[in-house]
Amino acid sequence: MCGIVGIYSQTPVAAELYDSLIHLQHRGQDAAGMLTSAGKFYVKHGLGYVREIFTPADIARLKGNIGLAHVRYPTAGGHDIEDVQPLWIGSPRGIALAHNGNLVNHAELTHEMTAQKHRHLNSSTDSEVLLHLLAEGLEQAGDAPDDVEAFFAKACQAVRYVMSRARGSFSVVSQLIGKGLLVFRDPHGIRPLVSGARKTADGTDYIFASEDTMFSALGFENMGDVAPGEIVFVNQRGQLFRHILSQQQFAPCIFEHVYFSRPDATLNGVSVYAARLRMGEKLAQHWQRVFPKILPDVVVPAPFTSNTAALAFAQQLGVRYAEGLYKNPFIGRTFIMPEGAARRRNVRYKLTPQKAELVGKRVLILDDSIVRGTTSREIVRLVREAGATEIYFVSACPPVKHPCFYGVDMPSYAELIAANKTIDEIKQFLGVDQLLYQTIEDLVSAVQDTATHPCMACLNGKYIAGVPVNA
Ligand code: SF4
Image (cartoon, rainbow, N blue to C red; front, top):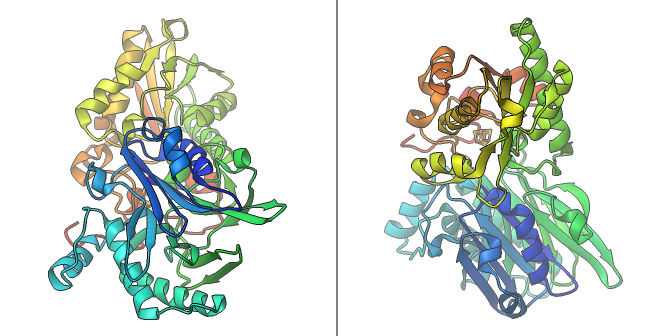
């Protein structure tokens, strides 16, 4: 998972790109980068948190009114500085790109680019392959120097070429020197991409981002999602053009609502916060049907992503919502820590049990999901050691049984606990007295997405955009 943003503004964009990255930090904590243009590209990349990477001097140096930015957590490529986005290329013109998603035919395209076409790739990412595809498409389409509508037609031709070659998920913000900001989303719309506009005395500014979490702070109005298969182009004078190039079944990632997006985000017209409240309510109703005689003393969220669902769960059961685990907000989320051992250690670094809420109590822990089970098991141990007499564990997401090939770090089948153990075995592994998962039907109805078939491949194994050949 990554976070991307592209801004066209009447004024220099670097400071607003920085603010946007702060609002997207939860989507990737491995690295971040910014790129602006004013006749040439100005670039700053770094490893670590956004606050650690950019200085006031960087912001002053990043000139221009059009820019891109990216926060990274790797699902393709490694942890090297060469893998940090936005990426850029100098021919057939200056083209830069930031990508959220994953190409399932990354290996084949890389082979074509290197072994057959003898290109040099600087990184090991699928995003660089996507950049080369876009460059190829633009080269084939040619330029239209004096006619913006004719150039938009050529940009459509180029992106159509990208869509015909790339398989998987790709939400992209890019910029072309001397032309403007170019944005597109894969034909299934798997990864999110939201647009916003801001009227100023001098014209209209535009923003395109993985989430609208920064819109309010920066004064942008949400003008809806970039549609699946859509291209949007904002030229250097602020004229906006958009066109749907390819319409296929809309399949946005349901896990954005479960875990990844911030609760104040609105994706595809659906409030993530409201969806999580409904998840908690439906899960509680399910609990009441399955365990009508078991009432916990407190409902404790695994903070912070589960807080909203736990609030609704507790309300539905008529039980107290308790902050039984204090989370240190300055340590990164364990789900996106790259190493398993670090993940387990960090549970204890970042979570402290509130004994007053746990000693002698029957505690129900609500977590957004159970992926490997290692984080959940550590949380259960912490709560048990703190003095809980019984522990029930509920997951707002159904069992994750299949890997994700579309940009979320759902690991291989071997690492997914629900792919390898029965519910009883998971219960034993976690060390809990009861375990309950949300049903797929309840999750879909909680999200209430207008997409009739959201991507749930990690839950049901139906991969709408294919899988890698070696999967
Ligand atoms: Fe999202 Fe799961 Fe689909 Fe991956 S497989 S895009 S995590 S719903």
